[in-house]
Length: 253
Image (cartoon, rainbow, N blue to C red; front, side, top):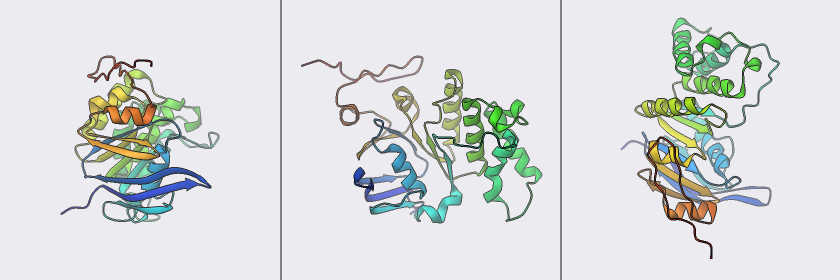
């Protein structure tokens, strides 16, 4: 029996005296496409960082592909929401994307043609090939986001974690990007934090709603329980041009 992609048991975490996550449990099969939704401050990004091994649980455990996050760090790709970067550093978009190949090469070896070909294909798919020589600091926020997605994919991860990957990209590219993720999911487990509930309902195989606690639902269906937990009242889901589910109309008491 192969290991779960993600296995979380009785996890709790606090910043100082403020509890952010409590008694979280999750078992995610390999090959899943998980959308994480929930309110700002509900603990979504913190949960992602615990999965990545960037934070340690106060209680409970996290296992990725049957091991601790640190043991399989080379098998994970990550695109953070905050693309903090020294914008004055003289490095090109191509060089940033190539950084994703570091873990695929022996220590000290220069990038080979295979590395460059892989990154070139990814930049092309991200619509950034024509900007490959541009300094990363001269690109727009959305363009930098595309380069960092290419960097994460260049590592050829078994699991890809993304925190609001479409927050700064134009609407047309958002559609193309989710189509790309759909194809990528044939070989890679994907976990995405998003506020775009219409996209979650259309593209993803399973959903986790996080608001200190976690509710998990297989099948990509957003339930009334999730919406009530996250937003404390019923919500109409409106999606333009994509399939969507509409929940009951909110009636004021």
